[in-house]
View (cartoon, rainbow, N blue to C red):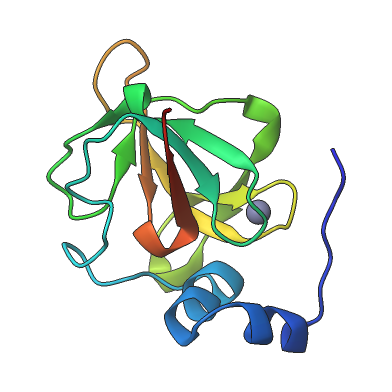
Amino acid sequence: MKKIQKTEAEWKAQLNDLEFHVLRKSGTERPFTGQYNDHDALGTYLCNACKTPLFDSSNKYHSGCGWPAFWGELETANIVQKTDHSHGMNRIELLCSCCNSHLGHIFNDGPPPTGTRYCINSVCLEFVAKE
Ligand SMILES: [Zn+2]
């Protein structure tokens, strides 16, 4: 996959303040505020920074956690997992493998068949509806 590298100034010019804070500074949007938290349309979710396809709507479910949740990803090559010890917690951070933007975290309390919960910030996603 082609890697996208931009300077901080280039990302700031492309993203709004919240997108920059979450995607480029590993921030978190406030729960239950994101546009895709209660979003059930059929389609594909892309990385909002570089438009790499990350998730399919068929893998989305209602976790109740306040952020969009998925139990599986489209292509394992498109998402990188990284150990995250910030905020005194041991978590696994999810990053877009193309542009290295922060997406959210992954937990092992998801539904079948994977038991995995991809907890993703809405501002890190762009939704493209199925034709
Ligand atoms: Zn990306």
